[in-house]
Length: 166
Image (cartoon, rainbow, N blue to C red):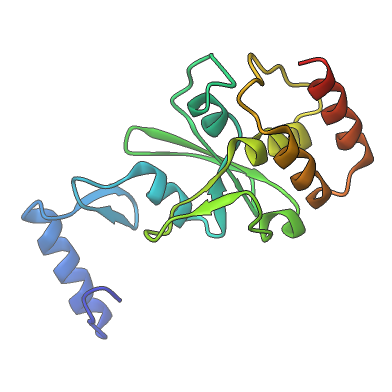
């Protein structure tokens, strides 16, 4: 689609040429990137729809202190794949939650990232027991507003307990 080449064999030859001349990198079978690619953007595009969430966002927001190099995403399937030097961890979630854009920042380049509040709720929804190092940076009003997306009484109780005891 990028090079507007309708002939599949010619397209394969072109891609092979670009890899040979080092204008493209083949980081995984069928996945080609330029040298300055964004791993987060790539992660959102491999299995779409997907958005970056869970531990990755919580770590960036200072809610989790333990470092992990994994990029964690929420998607329609569960997969853990290694691409280049990055581990991409896709976690499956219900379609009603996945397709709701509330609390997700959508960038022009196709990268979608959850807000810390949405990542907090995704994490609690997918993991019944989870420890958070610091919840001071969470907007509690936004957490309560996003809570209705999940339609779970157990999640509501866990969130209320954690927010009261934070």
